[in-house]
Length: 319
Image 1 (cartoon, rainbow, N blue to C red):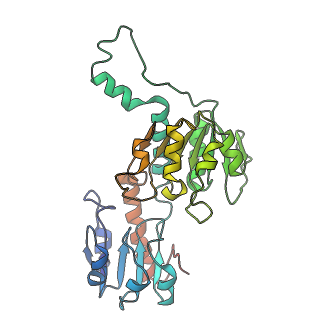
Image 2: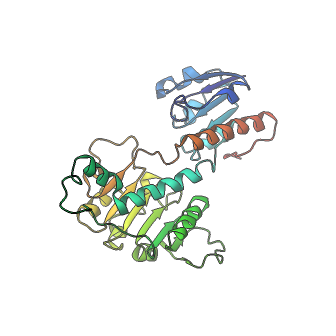
Image 3: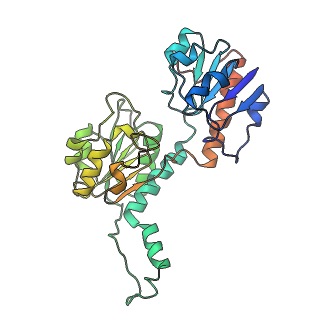
């Protein structure tokens, strides 16, 4: 059985093992695959794994041996799942592997906005504390989370865990979701629709999937409804926010700050307006990428394939 990994470097730059996959068949691993090389590299493969390398209908139809596509991520929009279904090709994804890491990153961004840890550390290293006339100083406002309200857009597995940590910080929770589940165990919680959530939250954190109805959800008009002291966090999908509108809102002080791990185009063009926006922290889509989360992703991907071979496929996205 020939197994081809089209873009293995992002998942595994060398710090975790491919051995689980190699026990199943003959594996060829490419760090990256240009779009014009996909068919050539996967020509006689029965199994193909991809993270972000696109497998559209034209490509799928040029791979006659293909029986299974494993997406090395939760989102699977890089694969034309319907075209694969028409060919009888099973497509699987890897859900749930990165919840703890994404939640951790959400609060890393928020705490940096509240405490400016790196900026203060940099100023100390540059000698400012040594030369200070006072025993301490702060260059930026310091903000306490206790008593503040966090609005969580998307209250699924990740969003609810964000709520748990927010509760530990003493925050109140407003959440919006397509499915309003029973949250009666939470005494600091209420449901609200997005407009009310945006108006009343001190922090807005996005954890919803990218659907047509969520694309551009955070735009010029919705940003105007937020508190001028509010922070916006996005560790979900970039196109949920209109980058230019957020940059304008930050520069005009419509909102106070943003911490985002995703952008509408990745990698971003050098002229993305958020690069010059006020009080904007941008990280390169790394919320999912702790070693522990990537090891879980690898383990689940291998189990997905083993289940498929055993005739009992799991995590199938094109049933």
